[in-house]
Length: 287
Length: 307
Image (cartoon, rainbow over the protein chains, first blue to last red):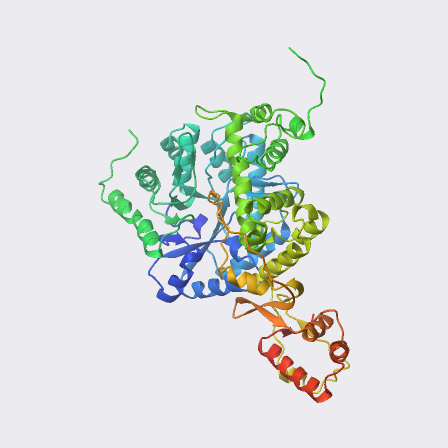
């Protein structure tokens, strides 16, 4: 799982998602941090302030691109203009690899702007893998697919989510961005064991891990990326690195965003779990 | 048991197995507007109960029915889009009020769903929609159109393309009769019936837009007080300087001149059109004003190299 061909053989350490409220602080204080992840779509523009900020960030930090609109699971034709813009941005950022989600989001050219769950079928594996391959071929950099939080399951599904993710990654020969918060959220919503998930995905393909907060309600959990990461999610994280080794780790915080220092401190908590695993102090959650 | 011969809709038939069918049915379901209480509509577009449609392709779980699970996505779709809409059109919201603005946004996005991978383009067809369906902004269609135009111009000025600015030196010796000047693509020239620059500045808008993320959105309905812009014929260039968006007031003749240039007129033709508006003004004064205006515009980098 550490530096591998799916993350461009990088060992970036711990990073945070670059967010607008932190621009000023980051640009003026240049805080110490391994790397930033950007949402590609926010910088796939023709000019103006977003690109100016990005240029300045690139002067001091490594940036990895993470997207929200490739919709690997959609059946619409891939938008060539979108890919052209993405490739142009990737050349600017020199991102060592790039990720997007295991989801769909558009139909007949209409975009939902959401990460919608895919029915886990053989047909969907084939469709999704072929799209990832096409994107990877065009971009000429490693592409990773991220498991999403989901709130619905389909009658049509023929396999579990981890089987689907594994099949897609193998068939597309791509990396995995393992979001351990999303595993927690989906496990809660669908009643599966998160550790069974971890034990059944090809961890050697994991290029990066996401951690984040979420919002728990009486009957469901939503992936809101708000608040600190809860202990149960850190536990899944720790198990993931115990099984697969430490890899690039990133905290996402998108709602009620606190100061940069709070976000960075939350991300750096990961170091504690890395140390526990390294020194054998961690007791596996799997009996 | 009642057996009906009612045919299933196309999406419904396809949803039985194939991926495209399931996606089409799910998209059609979640893109339907929410009820006033932010719930899913009771019936689908074909008249069947939504509960029946949801159960057809979504599994229930221990806590939620198929419909409730689908409803989470229905809400999420609208919360995300409305959030982005309000972000781009705060002025529209301020004078229409929350309820009317939500009704307009919902009607607009139902008729013109997003066809772009980026939410940045969400408001692109709003002007067209307001012209087509003015009832959503009645009795203030003119004001609403002005507001949509200036707020969309801001989107363009924020991250639109730029071209290398012309240097004054490069224009030396060119006969105005033949000189054509192009305005930066991020600049929009507007002739408005309301002083919307003053109005929007008072709204104290942020210089950085909120951006896309993959997180679930929780809608925050603001209880803003409605306010109304002052009626006043206004000429404005929405532009950017050092990547900050600005409104620059123009006089009528400045507006006419710049507008003529954007239509491909030569500098001489554009000046003639502008001077016609100032028939009583002394030629020396006209010339001095023109020199001063061009000097400012060149300094702002408004003119660029043509295609």
